[in-house]
Length: 286
Image (cartoon, rainbow, N blue to C red; front, side):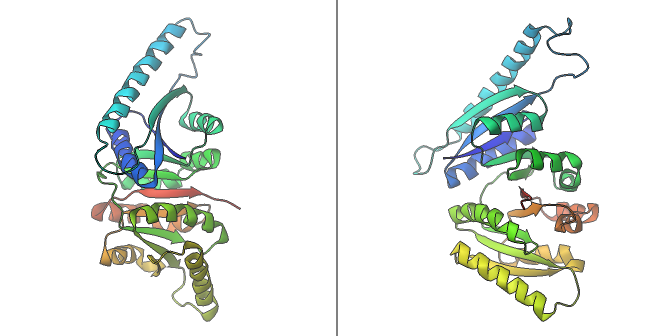
């Protein structure tokens, strides 16, 4: 059974991400674990600082667990039990530590398939992805990370794009993504960013060979290949929505990747002015 962990600080963007996750969980038949990391002031040790008695910590944890319980009940109330679909089991936990420490601890205790986090909007994408904290999170938890913009209210998927560098290690990420795409009967576009103005026969053969291997692995008719010139990324991403808007963008995170070419501040701002879509980031593998 699949489990999706929603990292929540109990703010509105996190609740929005949890609701988005509920729609996804029903489709892919997964359960949901709401998780909160309780912050502790490192300068005043929780157990040895007289001004921070254990009762205060327990009161804080109880208050957080109460809020997590309210959120879990809200999500359960949104499930239409009259419709024939999977009903996710929704549970929650709160732990002391940083978000990466807590996620790692939970991951060691039980199988987690994906982590979901809410964010305030597309302009934050570049900061999240190119920042050291997100990179560290992907390395420490080694799980797919779905970033859900605050403006997202529907989890319906018709068109998903995967930004590819034609690398072998992307195959496992694409296989994971195909499970989501099939559940929605959505279209998956493998998007390759062309670095040079001219593509020679060897490069074209590499593109076609990679796509053929993806097609054979997928055995799914709604998979296609799109090539976008590096200098026209914004226009190219818009073109992908010609026959239906892109409702999720996915990619593998690794150094000096297309992330740095697509999600510069300028591109992120342009994307924000047009649309705000969830971003699924896979950790790099050898």
